[in-house]
Length: 303
Image 1 (cartoon, rainbow, N blue to C red):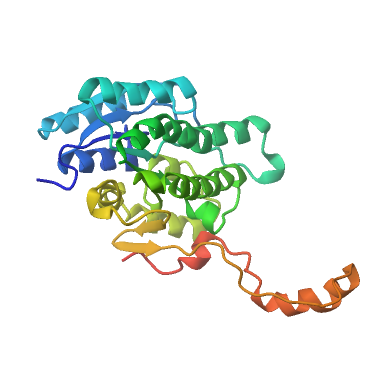
Image 2 (image 1 turned 90 degrees about the horizontal axis):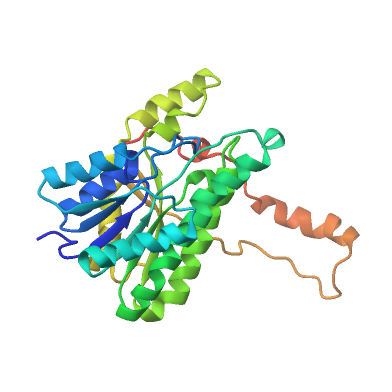
């Protein structure tokens, strides 16, 4: 008996990488799985059902139960059809893993509108579409769990990823709002920021030796390392865990802080632009957050 015995989950972007390993782990823990993947390129172009079919076949080869869905999470109707597919096939739905994503990395001053729109569409709107499609069922049955993939590109920062970072930090806000709004119905919502080698990471151009070394470190971190935490968060064992941001880096699991005030200044007579410059900012400056990137914070090798 696994932690997900008898449950039904939808895993988006499950044809490859992190999504595939989460789908396999969920099935190994007893869940029946809707394997969703449009099969687009990492840039978000084209469609190919083959990767999702291979994940379904792998689950069935292991004695599990899975069905294929090849639609786009960016389509409102498709998201609802995915939920209906789970209900029509197995009569219930217990969890959603919002993993589908694309990358269109471009330095900000060269980013095209389409590069922005497509990344936001798949990551943020796709996450909303899937979450909203399942919300009515979860509310009615007073159960359900959402697991959303965020990224340290949004939580901390990175070069050339304004679209991706905005979408991934938006997912954090979406998850927290779901956790607050759905708590009364015993529905949970959490985020994972994964460190793992995937075809999306592999598409990032290597500009210098330092980046090449970083990529070699990332290659040690397989997508399978993310799956145990995701499966746990989908399970009843995580009943008291909601509104949190986790990260997995090889064999490390992190809990991320969330935005809270760090320091304040007060002036009884109010502020002017001049007194802000003369008093407020000098007092607050020692608590400014440095302009770090993810690699600056996670400076040690994965363990």
